[in-house]
Figure 1 (tube, one colour):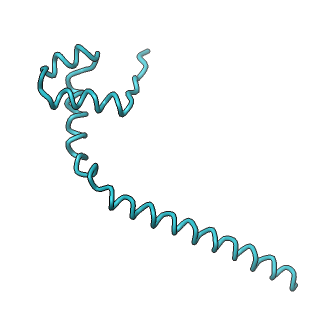
Figure 2 (cartoon, rainbow, N blue to C red; figure 1 turned 30 degrees about the horizontal axis):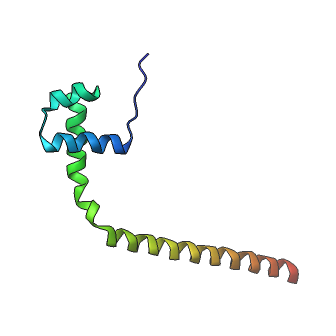
Length: 92
């Protein structure tokens, strides 16, 4: 039974950058790294499709700031709910 190999993002990036440099053919790269030609082509397509998001750091930071604020608000809401429930039982 064949076991599926998992490759790190660092390794995939290294292979894709070598493929983009075009110093070696895809066949040579496949032999060098023990991969199939189609796998390198697929990684290359995925890399090129998502390359635009690399330089959008400002936008992603705003999302994380919003996420942090949202978490704080949920925490406050949860704490208030516990307090309200406690007071309801205390008054009953």
